[in-house]
Length: 307
View 1 (cartoon, rainbow, N blue to C red):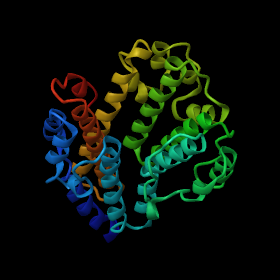
View 2: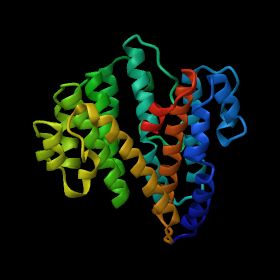
View 3: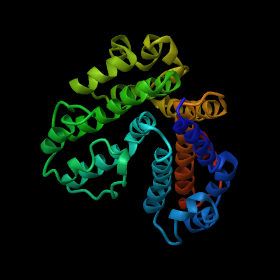
View 4: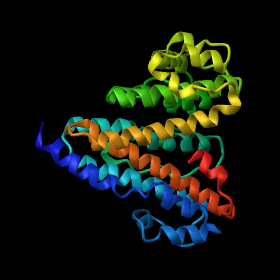
């Protein structure tokens, strides 16, 4: 194993130790206001990007930025194969940027894109696209692939399933995360929103979870048709109303598996992927806590269910 991966493991473990964990973040959720929650985060690693008086969306964006910055720092310690893996994991940030671009093209406000630096896959190539058709064309010339149409909904869904496909190549645990998340996403689209998947997204979904699962008539049947190693994602979910629990389960598994990868003795991609998983779960939890605090804190049972 190269010295780069040895150094990367040490750095990854150090960065992951900055995660606040459930107990400390729950205290943030119990704050009586967003201002109080931001004050509580000021002395944490997230505080470097937060400031008093920030609006909720700006604060949540800043919390996510902290993860991306740590990933960019980690990339500087890794050999090329490690950077390729981090680029795949950073796909969420690029999807967020493209989502925002599509919103602006639709005349709706959107958050600012994230600065991905060397972790970008396609951005900023689509950034100045004049319409969704141009966004599709520019994405088609990148590792994301061709979304198959210029429909914004189809582009958004395709990107999420394309991201899952990319992450699935980062090892068995990452493959399980990606397939489980894809199953929950497809179930939500089909049985929650009542939408048929566009063809390009359908192709990606079949590769991730199998044709039989994608074509199932309901959530319960879909759970039974998933590959054996993916059934955990929808286990016990009888209808679309329970999919939020399945999503929370995916995040819990991500965090638990990430911690296990960090504890493992092997150098290589495992600790790097594990660190990003642990940090991403913590970022999601902090963002949810800020939203809960902005609503006045108090009883946090709803927060506990999703966090």
